[in-house]
Image (cartoon, rainbow, N blue to C red; front, side, top):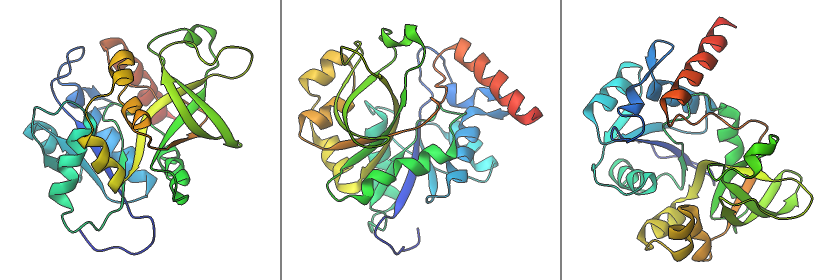
Length: 253
């Protein structure tokens, strides 16, 4: 990888594993004539923030990325999380530490807006922020109490900017006011990612089943930026059909 200039030097990494239980071979699922991972790689590339590399445990996924002109790196199959997978990939492809920011884009977000990736970098212009992420205001009433919709509880420090205080599957905070859906895209300072993967799972992380709580419990600062639309995460066959409908409509338009 080339040496870069500038205070913020991002590398976009997309973790993708074949062994999803609810949707086997998920990265290779066909959407609008291409595997899902190709769509995610393309969205990330269109953001234009830095090089994009897929970190995968599968030669088949790597080949699918290569066919559309992308780059992939093979990682171990036994990683507990995407964060561990991208850390292995980062160490392998950038031993000289040219990149000081790592954007973790989930490999199951084929409808992700490239602008959202660009917006995720904004909080890291402040040196105190170690990790940045995205949220969107919850509009549908049923989502406010749905455990599958992770809520960010935070202090608004500027319009559309939050310092994250907690993440939960419960309905929070109580009382009148907006609730915010957390979108699982993260931008780490390199040192923050390296520290994070060394930490053991934390008590609240294990209780809520939310990895980001490990960082908060360790005292790391996470800030969030609000975006207008929650990208569709493809976890089930029903999600996959919805993604196919959305992408078919976009291609028609």
